[in-house]
Length: 296
Picture 1 (cartoon, rainbow, N blue to C red):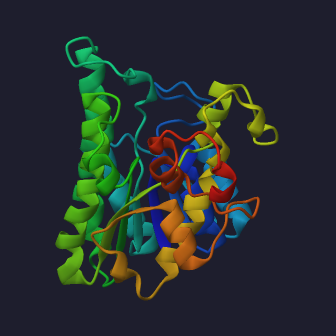
Picture 2 (cartoon, rainbow, N blue to C red; picture 1 turned 30 degrees about the vertical axis):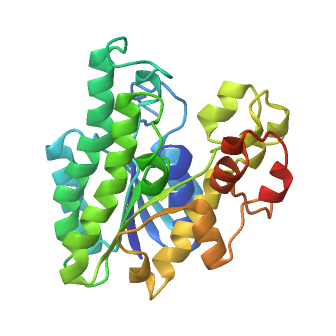
């Protein structure tokens, strides 16, 4: 399996890349942060680290610095993959990089417009540029897979306003891209879908709460945090989907890490099977604060 993860530097992208590596894939780990230079996110994680984790998991990790807002760089990446591998089987679009650009519960007339528009470029334009240059390689062989990574399913986001207009539009749009690719790949036997993690214990989120993966339960957070998951959880679900000869049954859908875990009988690294979206809709939105234990 030849895979490319756009936005593999950290978080869900890294989790998916490593899980694909564990499945034996060769994974191009792309992003802007390298050991030589950080992106505007100014985080310490790098694509080289991700590639090393992929290789340690049993695959072959290849770091490839790419700014997905630069079409020429993405076109060159596609040619590199073509020249080195001759094909592309799996494309994961997980470029984000917008955490520092949006404000909670801020109306459009109070939100910094330049930051909001930058967020939309990072969250949506990058995915379109990725598809424009990498899908021609993917469709050369029947059965390619494109996975769009977002926050919240189409069904969840469609009826709930997600914090502010820029974030809301970004996350709903990426769900729609998964549906779009399902239509555009259908003549080539391909599969396109959108996936979402739950409350993610990413590197940045652990830092935000001042905890580590070893003591994450000590964080001062709302009860949904107790149903949180590591990036490996969705990663394992996506890897199982990529190996599924009947994966076209998912095409066009927007699914959670929970749904993939149940379908493929995978768990998080601690053996749990978190169900945070079920917890949010069945407990938190019904004014409940307890009972999270049955959702882990």
